[in-house]
Amino acid sequence: MTEDILSSFRKRFNYTGLILAGPYSKELKHNLSQAIVHLEALERIGSPIIPYIAAWRPDDEHIWYEYTGLRLHSLLGLKTTDLAEAFRANIITRCLYRNQKNPPAIDKIIRNRSQIDSMRNSMRRVAERSGAVEAVYKIEANNGPVWLKDLARIEIHNRDGVVLSYGSLIDVTKEMLLEEKLIEVQSELSFHKENLEFIVIERTKELRKAQLDVVSRLAHAAAYRDGETGAHIKRLSQYCGILGRSFGLSKKANWALFHAVPMHDVGKLGIDDSILRKPGPLSSNEFEIIKTHCQVGADLLGGSDSFLLTVAKTIALSHHERWDGSGYPQGLTEWQIPLASRITSICDVFDALTSKRPYKKAWDFEDAVSEVTRLRSIYFDPKLVDLFMENLPKIKKIFQTNTA
Image (spheres, rainbow, N blue to C red):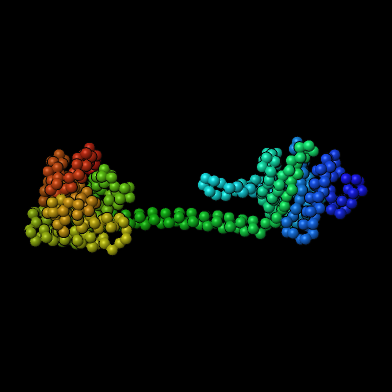
């Protein structure tokens, strides 16, 4: 390209590059000049795309533009001829979107300016190997940040020792502002969600604590009416907890069993003291009145969606049912009797035998165990009796620890 043609080219296309005036091959200069002519035509028709041609030498960090659309100057408010370096200096972040295979997703990688500076050479090598560039740049401009999507094709000219990037910049500021707003909203929603979850967890703990407090008070009131002590309630819960775990109940189910069992006799709140505290044997009529405590207890505990109270109602109603059908109030047999009630039945009878009552002395531990064994498959579920015997060391430890 002669000096006259180059001077004309500079005036016509505002050319400030290095290749057309430098020691490069005619073929490269011809192809480059043709590309500039075509890109200028694209500019004249008012295309929203901002075309550019960037260049660099593989062994040099410096980068320059062979051509840039005029909109890039006005958009960034930059008038310097070294626009490439000015563009680089104004980068806030570089965002790269990649397809992720496992699991299928789009991976987003964001680099800040210092990261870009430290990784510049490696990013160039990647572009040279792949032959393409696709990224979104957040640029500091006079009127605030703008986002430009960069799509480029890379050409390596080994003979001339230069790399050309034929690219297009697209203003995606509105889209990225929307994305940032969505991320901000999602972050706020996530915070509120976590906060609400925390509040729900704390409220649930408070409600559970209040519920357990009411349950405990009811259980102690019933025990007091029956002349029993808090130690009885404590032992009974622990015995049932051992059998429940040994049977394989879930943590939730065993928790409910442990806390529901103390309410098994809550129906006795409706029984007259003269019957409850009678020191001698009950008459047949008095015994029929005593038997009503099962239904009374179920009625007191009914009408709730609480899992704990549902279990408590079941136990209150059927803890006097017997394996052979001789129990009350419904005369249920074997597996017709709910599991929680079958467990409670064994533990309640055992603790009653080993406890002093107005009408009897406390049995020795070994005698009470023998009685439970004798009643296997008569009063009690045989499998649960076997589990009771397997856990006898634990049962005995609780008995010794909580018996005055």
